[in-house]
Length: 489
Ligand SMILES: CC(=O)N[C@H]1[C@@H](OP(=O)(O)OP(=O)(O)OC[C@H]2O[C@@H](n3ccc(=O)[nH]c3=O)[C@H](O)[C@@H]2O)O[C@H](CO)[C@@H](O)[C@@H]1O[C@H](C)C(=O)N[C@@H](C)C(=O)N[C@H](CCC(=O)O)C(=O)O
Ligand SMILES: Nc1ncnc2c1ncn2[C@@H]1O[C@H](COP(=O)(O)OP(=O)(O)OP(=O)(O)O)[C@@H](O)[C@H]1O
Ligand SMILES: N[C@H](CCC[C@H](N)C(=O)O)C(=O)O
Ligand SMILES: [Mg+2]
Image 1: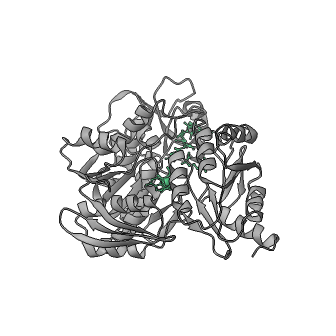
Image 2 (image 1 turned 135 degrees about the horizontal axis):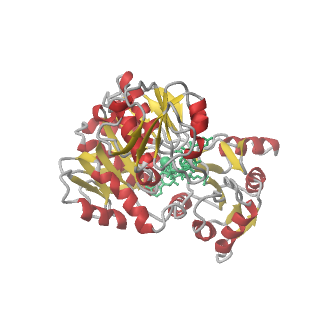
Image 3 (image 1 turned 90 degrees about the horizontal axis):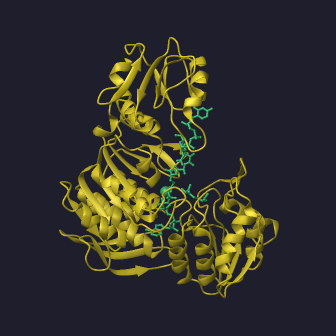
């Protein structure tokens, strides 16, 4: 595509060189640059893309986009200077891939917890209603039946627009995606046209990245100004209620859900079992019996979010009911490890205080004997949640093993000590075992008949990041391996 065409709708501060050259690819990482590429220089948190211009040119970049003056030897290379290269990336990516999101029914789900779970529910419902569906999120990305690895919850604008284009190529008509607060703040979804936006809930998280909870909420709120068909909001959530109030006068209609009485989409007569929830769904148009084979009160909320989104799109009530009833669960979310009989072992992705409290409450209701929890907190992430999660684990569990999650570049012991600051205020018994495998071993050894052992924080993850190294680690596999080694199964 001709470079000039990529710059449509953009305020360009300066162009040095030829803007009629042909661009075959766009990259924001110099290491991926090939002949005739446009290299976008992004000022990062660790380094600055402007430092790699020379590298990009050596690899064949014929144009670079910058947001500050550059000193590299750029003769023969077109330089485009804009105010904000992240914002510009969303625009050039949209043009390069032919504005694919405008041809999809795009549903965005935001909120602190429940995004992944809700998107899988929506995906299933859409599939049952015979839509060819894509999904973008934490665990994997899906283009119809094709599963692709996901690096992050919401990809960079360039990768995102490419995914949408690839979806259209194989006739995907609907796409449901998680929209993280990082992505809203870093303008990854800036040029996406959403039909529906969903807000699940908001509790403290990512306070390393967003300065205040208010900033975090405002980042999430941005999604609802990008939608055209409907905004779906949980009004049992305090911040959801505030957002609903703030967006109710927008041209895009608002649809609320909740179980505390005021939601337009609500659940009555909720029944919980160890493996499922069921309830009477009440909508403005009909009532319907719903069953979901995932436990926990938050499954009712995620179910209502998915139902409200699909309802707003006019999906048939039978398809909504069937979609939710055939969903078998979501990997790493209240995921029972098969092979244990005396006690249950459950792996869950709770890595925020709210998620941990919710999952522990749900599991405790079905524990016949002790509730044992193994968990830790990730390094290079929000530190304020560590003591809070420690206190929550100690409050609900009979026995807690505090261990490493992904310590990344932090000292693991320092993270464990911060968790201990919280747990020592409780009466729950706890042990600190840094090595996650050994922590799981200790928990299994101490499990007796009727217990539930919850291994929290890493859910579907199949790795552990220690320092800069990534090791294979899958909580479900490790639990079984260790149990076999110790003759427990
Ligand atoms: C905080 C954050 O979002 N960081 C993102 C940010 O990284 P950064 O600013 O630190 O980038 P950097 O490493 O400083 O590099 C700056 C630029 O130089 C480029 N570079 C670098 C080296 C080189 O040799 N050549 C080169 O061109 C890089 O490609 C980049 O464009 O920009 C990078 C490239 O665009 C992203 O990969 C990176 O995501 C990192 C991996 C990350 O961990 N992000 C997490 C926190 C995140 O986004 N999480 C959210 C929420 C999760 C949830 O709650 O569900 C998510 O959506 O996943
Ligand atoms: N609606 C909810 N409210 C509170 N906690 C929830 C809810 N849904 C799920 N959880 C808990 O949060 C964990 C993460 O759920 P899920 O992966 O669906 O959230 P997410 O928003 O996608 O998280 P992430 O930001 O990491 O992508 C689950 O393992 C469960 O413990
Ligand atoms: N999306 C979250 C996931 C956290 C998962 C937890 N296992 C950790 O590594 O902290 C993040 O990147 O902050
Ligand atoms: Mg997720």
